[in-house]
Image 1: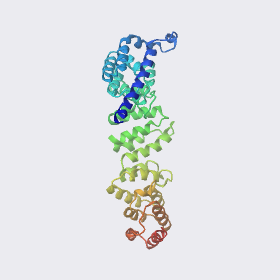
Image 2 (image 1 turned 135 degrees about the vertical axis):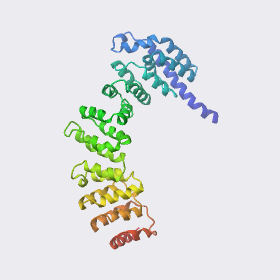
Image 3 (image 1 turned 90 degrees about the vertical axis):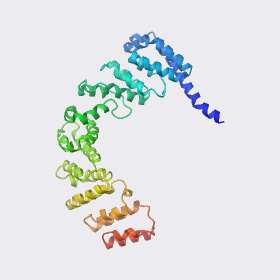
Image 4 (image 1 turned 135 degrees about the horizontal axis):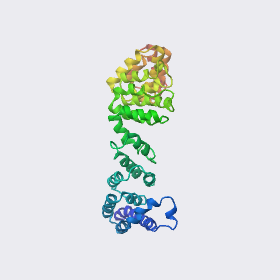
Length: 363
């Protein structure tokens, strides 16, 4: 029985290889109308590398995966176009990631033929690898905007595979010029992703660079709002929270739409020490802003707040009614032992303590 289980994966892969061999046979025999179908140029490498195709077919028939990988590597070194024409027709052969990266870096730059070739790669993981290596190989030798315009054509499986490495490099080394380009293009949410990267390298410049996004330009209102969330996530400190709220405008801390969510972005990722500073910053705000910002502490899950922490948070609310509502909502989300009431002593008012006792009595 054990031997049978071991044979099943091998049998499945051999079936896949058999399908591949059939596809490769068809690929090596061009149809009469192929030369006029608009992709004749992309078919030429297949003819030039017919001997390599035959070699790989033979190795796959024999089940020699390592031999097939070596042949693929040689093909990628000799003729990367032919390599990717063949790769587009292979099943998910394991262990070829490095070969894909090396071959993609050798492809001719910036032609419609190559864009179409890369987008024809079947397995999305391979397509992402190829696009990433293809554009990354030109960083520093080709203008950023040219790489961006080519990479944005990628049929991505994971987000931004054709331009992600370019964006990471630019966020670290030349954020001003790259953001200027994104501002000029406008109408794109890519700026949000760029600020996520920027916060890893230059968080102290976030407000300065944020101010360069032209107000009223295509996509700017959408981007500016979501970039603020990226900035908040990227640096979970009280100082960054206040700076981010300030960039919402004079009434930023009062915003029902953004103040609670920005507080949540920062508070949920902050250290215990920084959480204390965040609560102090919230407590220093005017009453209306303070109450709205506190909603972010419990924004998505009250379970993230311990009883000890809740006692410190709830006393910041400005009215008994808001304190009571916060208590009831928080207790509803907790899996509490009704017999454990030690935490009630820490609540700031007698009315809250009494209400907590009543809720536990009903459980």
